[in-house]
Length: 421
Ligand code: HEM
Image 1 (tube, rainbow, N blue to C red):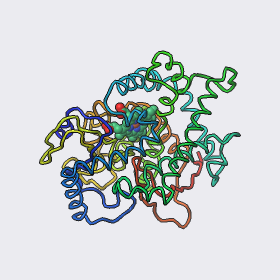
Image 2: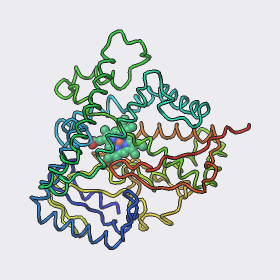
Image 3: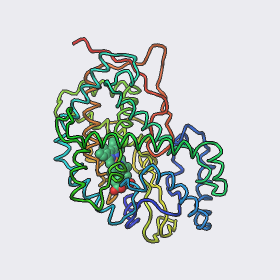
């Protein structure tokens, strides 16, 4: 199990040819993408076929992925998003900026008050305004709702089916059915939003500033790293909704498992929150926010189990399947946070059985940021309220969206009750 990851040697994101790989595909839950029911055997054969074809028809596969990249490329400002950048000097500098200046423990701590304010605000909204939509909660200028909407639309662009990705010669259909126009429109809206944000931060007379936020820090760093940080680079760093997706899955699993939910609430050592942390790990095992991580590209030919992976191959590591692999876990489908109570396994990248943040050189640099946010949000949600299913509902579904980030497909609707004591 552990060998698998290491065998990749040096890998990098993005590429020109693609292979879908996972020896675990047989275990892939059938509904993983969009609730489509696929027979396990059919799926496995399909993957085999796809692999052999892609390797044989290297040229065509390359073409497919160059096209696929164009869509990602557009939304990531020409691969200026660090996650989509190939392994090169630009990536090294951006990674340095992230590790040293943006997502370091010092920065995580310095944003503590902002994080707490946001979470308390969220709790107040739940307390004060049941049943309202995000846009109604919003501050005067509706920026939160606008950004949320843009994030949803961007995500949709990644998820949509594009003919050109699979049948390069039929790319004209994307124009005909309006997909390309929608992509341009979403990009334009996103770009406008980021530009306004930057302009606002550049405004010397800005009144609502209490401390430097990420944009302020990036704008300051722009001078030091002028070759790597243009406005497009700053925009390309963008944002992800992985933490939000993770909290929704955690709440979903807790409401489906009332015993665990009670245990979290009864945890008396609030400082350590061991059981809550076990719930977080168990949810990451079953519902990793990025089920296929960010696909890396092999820099050299390598042999992986019985597969030969040619150089420059886009490789999908299936964190979803690893989390449900019976070779790694017992009672794989059960939600059992207890399994982590007497175990030293964590998700920092050293244990390859649990890799929601990936591992190694391209592992998530926002791990401390993300996990701190998730812990704070979840603990406040479960300690501030008793959560119940809406009247007339017996269960919560676990259908997922398609795409890089795995969201719950249907909104999680719960009733929050303020406890009596
Ligand atoms: C629960 C929250 C999060 C999860 C589950 C998550 C997960 C991941 C995963 C799986 C990868 C790919 C790693 C790999 O392929 O080995 C990744 C990459 C990345 N993440 Fe996160 N992430 C989270 C939060 C964040 C946050 C809050 C930030 C920024 C503040 C962030 C910034 C990044 C960046 C920049 C990369 C690309 C790194 C590179 O390519 O060198 N992530 N994340």
